[in-house]
Picture 1 (tube, helix red, strand yellow):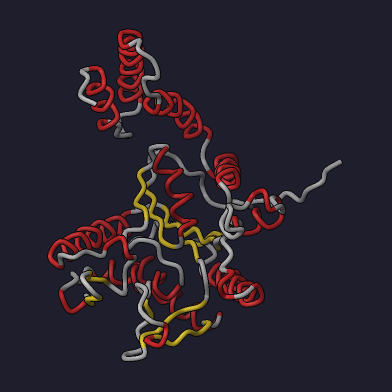
Picture 2 (cartoon, rainbow, N blue to C red):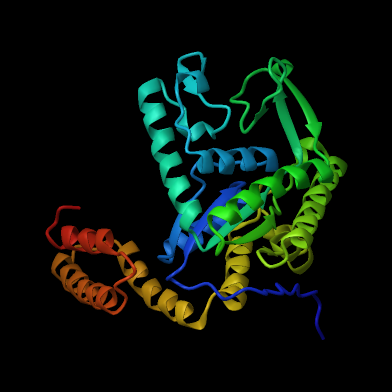
Length: 331
């Protein structure tokens, strides 16, 4: 007897392997899943503008990347001692505007290159609610803790989002015709908006994905991570303590479903082999047996070098260097 509903991923594209280049934009759930790809040595660019929650901020970031227009001081706002960008997450904020602009433009350059050459673009929508600066109507990616009276808050419509996103996708596909776009809706609940408002928001995003699929049916695919958490993992034990974010176990489960259904068998074998090496790297000396630990590290180094020789397209140079440094007692 089966006591749960299993959600089919219904993957229609080619399976992902380590020769593919991946780009992730979107909410913190994009960070979670993108980090899984990155940790398993896929060529991955993860949120070059930082976490972005709403579709309009995501489209603005993609458009800026395609335009390749560098950021300048006019794109910054100073709040207290910190400079911020309304187009970026606060991870870019800094007390030194020159340092901040340098970091923003390095990320912009990398984003531009990757988008124009990537095989897959993953976009995770978090909320349909947006905040607009009252002074100029700009949709902000982050309010940077400014008082609420500086902003107008509204829920975007399916029609508005579809028109805006379709325009950007058309442009991206002209530049990079091979790119496949994978849309997901974050299962993270925005409870500060209220339960009903969160449901309206998520419904808007799901309908947006449907509309875009209908327009670009050969290039856009929907990954039902939202449905997996709500239907397959329908239990609060799969949520973190805040009862809004997926738990570590839930994220790992979703990652396993992705591995099973959208990642190639060859790539899964590589993931398994790399996992043993990664586990060894994560192992730390827990006793006084320093010589025994060095023997372990030397064996691990041989395994890592063999892996690198077998898979020359996968860069593990930093990992090999870390093992060598441990052997030489440098770390």
